[in-house]
Image (cartoon, rainbow, N blue to C red):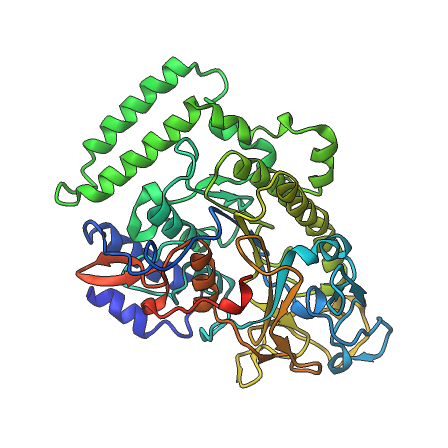
Length: 484
């Protein structure tokens, strides 16, 4: 083991974002020099697991979506000057859904109307990673591993790309939509897990930061002919092959990079690229999705699944102190966030169902953690408060869930063999609203996703002469109660 990486690992528990970046960068470098990862025999995939899904859409609520304000409403408290913070559990009233006995939060009426097609998990619990940082928790959720590591952990989409390959040879197996890096103060931290990791560049994401401009990602730059583009592609191939940075003894990384270039070039030449052109969508349906970048990302995901995409992540875009990262004005900002996601998610479910694609497509809605007005972390494992919350609220900006909460979180799932109109898990009705029934960890949630695809939690590769599994230490267990 690289000594500097081991030192980072021992001292990482309470480090900040800069240290996180250094540690994950070191792990990435270690992966580049670790040689070819060897896929070891799949223990259960073909023999015992019958796949229920061919494609996955991960709807990522980046920033920390409060469960008591969305899919797990508690006692409602309307705002008034002088209300006590500790008395507030939900700032929105509960509403009925298509499933009798399951209520969700006001502002999510359209999702509520399709809840009879899916399963709502209310008992997702997040890891205890020391100081709560969005980048660390997002890394943990997307890879299944707590940072740092001596190898670069692949994103869940990269594992699916490696183990199943593309469903349509012309389309990238892993497509990431809606998370720009430009102007984001945590861009480098996000890049640490949006990667193929030790599996190589060919399994990393094909990135579409702005879905409205997606078609530009599969066309030559303005003013450039395809002939000139092909010449540039060949020149870049030659440059990679002669690169002094990638050493001859590590041909794997070089070949992986060349393969990713080849895949991108093939997409440019393929009719499948039309799936990225949102202008081809009927205007009426385009308008149903057009609540902003996330809504158009859902529309793009629909078109890609219809064209044979394997794994797609659509993000509400994580930007510090914006979106779901509600350090202030929690109630008023959630009004906007609900409008952003409600219609597009419901429409995505209905459109996939209408064309017969929902049963073989697994949709997951999740976030890196939840939020609470009073508790930071977990009740029994509190961390330092990052948000000042007065005992008595005199201004609307303090009304909402502002502190990071890892004791419970909600996950919504549709398709992929998942039960319909089903509720799983339970949280306490009074603060702290933590999981009290059927906890689902990240490891077991990932195992459930993999199981839907026919992948064993013990599948993986050999890196640095030791096994590296798709779930942490290969110990994940799918939650079988979620499947029909």
